[in-house]
Amino acid sequence: MSGRVETGRITTDIPARLDRLRWSRWHWTVLIGLGTVWILDGLEVTIVGSMSDALKPDRTGLGMSAFDIGLAGAVYVAGACLGALVFGQLTDRFGRKRLFMITLGVYLVGTVLTAFSMNPMWYFACRFITGTGIGGEYAAINSAIDELIPARYRGRVDIAINGSFWVGAAGGSLLTVLLLDKSVIPAELGWRLAFGLGALLAVGVLFVRRAVPESPRWLFIHGREQEAERIVSEIEETVRRETGQELGTVSGTITVRQRKAIGIGLIARTVFTMYPRRTILCFSLFVGQAFLYNAFFFTYGDTLTTFLDVGQTGWYLAVFAASNFLGALLLSPLFDRVGRVRMISGTYVVSGLLLAGTGLVLGSVSAVSLTVMGSIIFFFASAGASAAYLTASEVFPMETRALCIAFFYAIGTAVGGITGPLLFGSLIDHASAHHDISAIAIGYFIGAALMVGGGVVEAVLGVHAEGRSLEDIARPLTAEDEDSDTVDTGRAGAPALGTA
Image (cartoon, rainbow, N blue to C red; front, side):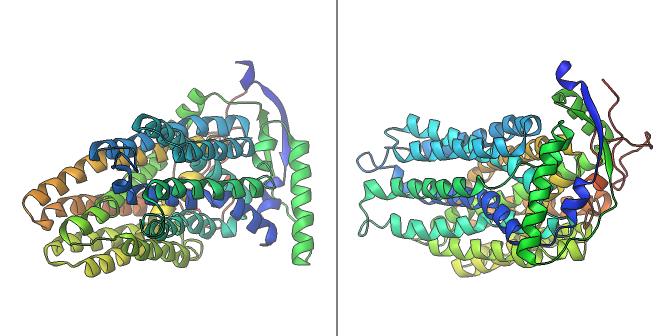
């Protein structure tokens, strides 16, 4: 247990100094270096979803059956779940920067190897590796961003960045229109080039990411306060130079008992016993948004081709993706101004009700009308779904942040990416056999009910985190706290751990 022994006690003003910073070019560097993971994920998911026909031929593809393609998707999801849990724990233990460099490297290797796939088994293995890297990215990146971005900007930044998944999705949709056009690019090269482009983007991100520092919040808790002080001083000097303004003074401090590491068992026990309300909240939000996207988006392409006689889905998917990104981008400032609880509950309930309404008229839709309905639904839903990641990132103590993100991401991804496709795939098969598109409406209704339920849970258990320091929302487990009887009220922080 020596790894968990207290190494010292310090009083620091680092969180207050980071939260009082003005927005500068330095913050944009952080966003570009860290936030582009969602673009990569959107690119991956959309490209793979659009190239199923290209992978089937023996001569130009990999000779994969429809079952093989579905299995590859499940393997990718399984890799993402495992990667999130493994790398999430390592991120809390060994630091944000070390892991967000490693996870991007894992993604890069998996994507490059996928482009050189020689048979289905190779392809499955590469999809698993790629998914592992992406899952690890979610945990490492969300925690790093929230710990570096000032409190008054945290909500809009986090939601807009999570929403950038749809920039990748739109780009992937348009790329497949070109790359899978046999008259422009040979069939045997198009799908390989698609994976290669994702790897090329990742290389660029890797170079930008090198300039992003380790989280000072993570450093001072783990006994590296001198390094944390140096990094914060450098950031302050950079912000002064870039803004041309002096920084205001700070008075808020926090006292922590430093530890080199905290065991995962103690972390899990602390989180689930101290924060049961927040655990229920995050579970409800993640499961709701996962089913919503499976009820509509992940059956959208099949619905267009199977029931509405659409040959090329790329243009429709691009319009749909654009509305998702615009929703996250345009609504994100309201999560800081209007507040988390009102906006999260509102976007969940509105999108759920709209999805239910679409299910009721599904038998009379056209490709255009279904796309318009989906665009309106997900204008609201994308902001809400992004807010689920924000919630898991900011309502638990610093020592558990990455692991909590990973845990709820894995739950949501497993429900949406494994259980969801099985259910909705069977609904489409049944509807196709009876030539009745309205038979898939049950999937819409399930997704709608879970979204409305998530919105209600948010209204009851939501945390008013807007504009507040992370340490105020949930005090670090190692923090000195005079109130040892703190409970999970949705406002108070957690009591500190006892000495080892």
